[in-house]
Image (cartoon, rainbow over all chains, first blue to last red):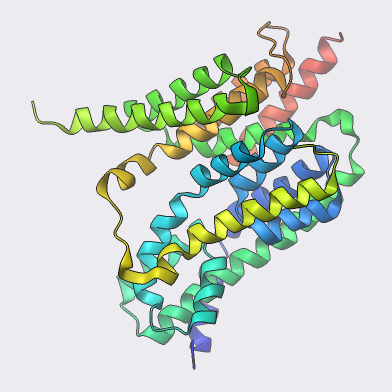
Length: 232
Length: 112
């Protein structure tokens, strides 16, 4: 048996308070897709196939501004790069699983599933079957919450007139994600530099200004933080 | 990419999905064959702040085509108020409400 039933239920329950954050984000993902004029199946498909909120919204925004294909892919890569870290932290706990289970586990990987599971492993040191079960429970809980709320968002969004500009929820959602992460000067520097540069370079072809601004912002933040860590 | 061409839209979604899946799979499938370099980990911290900021402000200032830096720009006003709300509340619902609310109110007050 791959996972104990009890641990799956434990995981599902653990994720319940997290749904308060998952559901609004999922609803906005559906609303924003329809708000930008995409069809319902595109709105649902984004959540099923990509299954990553920030990059879904970025994809919707970039598609609606006719951004270059490569820009969209690079932006996705940057936004979702953190999944590499999550994958690295989670892999040791799942390495005994057969390939198809690892594939499922990987597809379901999200910020809350990762955070809850790693915390649980650290706290309880459970045996392998319980680790897998707990992770699957949290991951499935988030997945269900996300897909259902996207569907709700798509349905609601379709009833609302275009003049309400529901696509404006995309930058608003980004603001609500970014602003709380600005806790030190390097991060503030990264955010301001990237924001200003992106606006200044907005007329570059292929939306290259977006990539340029992001890379410069990340580089500046990294160097600044490195400088602050140096003694003296 | 043309957003009005369903085939192109699905192609983009498919490729974005594959990239994301590859990132999720990276260690889970490759196991110990890779190590994460230190600079990667340190840089990763700044990715959300930089990338999302680069997405937010052009969208707030122009919605994709031309940029309007005038103070009459309803999106700019709503964006600034929403940023303040995000800072003060750290809550997505409040940020969204303030942002959308001020957009609609400013729009109603400044017909153009």
